[in-house]
Image 1 (cartoon, rainbow over the protein chains, first blue to last red):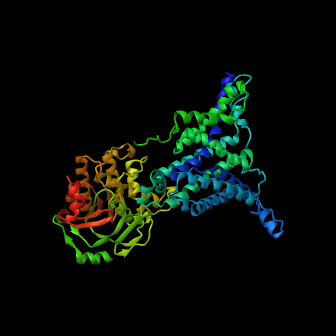
Image 2: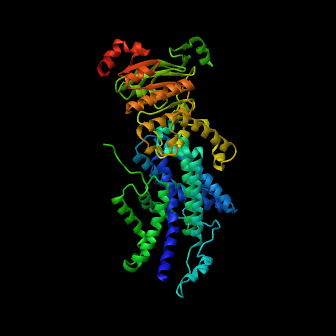
Length: 331
Length: 276
């Protein structure tokens, strides 16, 4: 019985970890659908957004190191702290500006190029942003605190303790994960409503479907790309806030993008519901596998590779993913 | 403005009682090259207000290229495009769409994941002006605009007799109906000039008759000017007021269907070989 209850706890925790994966995968899917670009820089965008947020919040002087070494000054802080919500708004604006610049200086020049070229461009973009972020805000590890409570949620633990016997202390859930789940839910619902019921949303879906046809009904591709990259930037910011609050803002934050790859293979590169369900499946799958097989039989630490194994199995049996479009070539 | 002045001078009445106005669009000495290949060579013709203008010619004659020049997918190296009495500078396709030129494609280019209604609504985009912020809150002007345009889309759906598939994702529709939805999307823009690239390709006789009827009705009821590419000579002779004939990127004939049918060069290049 207690085993079973712990199993349930594992599943719930897996779901919440999965939400985090979904958030990152969502950014990939948005851009891939609208422009056929696999955006390697998505993870770095999350890192950059989180760094900007911390920097703004803490009143850091941007490019402080550069300024100081050129002018021999000693500026580091403006000496103020900014309210978390205001700082988030400023970081969001930065991501919008970033989207505009990406379109203006990269995508615009690469229209109609092969996907591999666009992919290479995003790799370049990723490394550029990484260096630019370090230059702007410094490369030290930063803690991000936007006021979301962290640690085990005692209320839930107490209220669920009665479910088991002596040995069961109630479900242990991280409050941050609960917040992340709620925020991700709101974000995704907003996106879905926006894309279903507004003219711009319709244009976004149209561009995702057929570029030429979209042009022929008067949709400006460049405008749509700016919008899509903006949305992906905001999604990256949200992912950056969640992951950054959890494990600090540092270079490894950009590597969460790698965790999104198996999610995409499971869910399909072109499906928003796929990204979400794929993320949840991987989250549950890796936690449950670790709990039932990994820890008892394989010596643990299976979470590091389980997702990729699962993705590999999927590639063999269902290459388009759960929800991706089936690839049928006309002969 | 220029158009209406021209129209006063040049207005003519067709045998079946429709009024053809002045010049709506004029192509002057258009030349289009892809590298060393000359797709269109020094072609001039005009399209008059309210007429159905056909462009015919064998495969590879440059017909689709010509349509792509008109709607801005291709930019000719030489020549001028005159539209509504003014010369048209280099413009992007979406800007040209906003000027009232709508089109359909030879290989249907619908938004497959979207319903018939949504596809037709995308055709209304050039008529929707509210900003993204007010759309997001879905309030006041944005909502009113959405409702008005929705009503117009429903009129198009009634007109094309596709009420029963309003909510069906178009990817699931049979070919003939997809062609009809694509026509609907172009019509939703209330275009001044409607370009149809082989509207009847791959259709059976019954579907062709339906499509011919819709094209004639569109022209008749809305007074829409239509330029179309078609292979089926019977259809062209029935529909078109005037025909341009192309072969190897050049214009080899231009005139009424009868004139074109009796043109020696046309018969040699095209009708003499492949007419049925």
